[in-house]
View 1: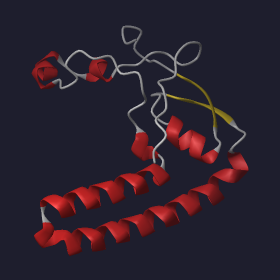
View 2: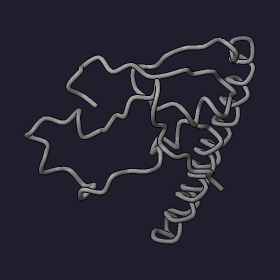
View 3: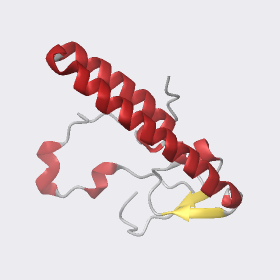
View 4: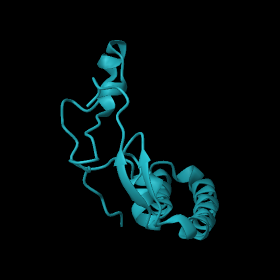
Length: 131
């Protein structure tokens, strides 16, 4: 399964709301219905989570569209294989730098960071009006 991570708060992890990036024209397209998120929504940034998601999506598509189930399974298997290779490559590439501290401009990467043991130390907010 997928381990859902809570949003990071406090200290160097400035609160960031995706709503802040929308213009007033986009307001009508807001689908969160005023609910404040408590969990980090960026689950797909961990390739292992993306594999779990792919399996679930393939299964659901096969149930609602059995005529094309074989195609969904074939494409899903190819994606899972690519994600597995990506995961191995990232593990190899990131191991030498995993202790290096770094800062991000948007706190969206904790699933990726936890998967590869990276050392993010905070996020930066460029617009003081954006919190």
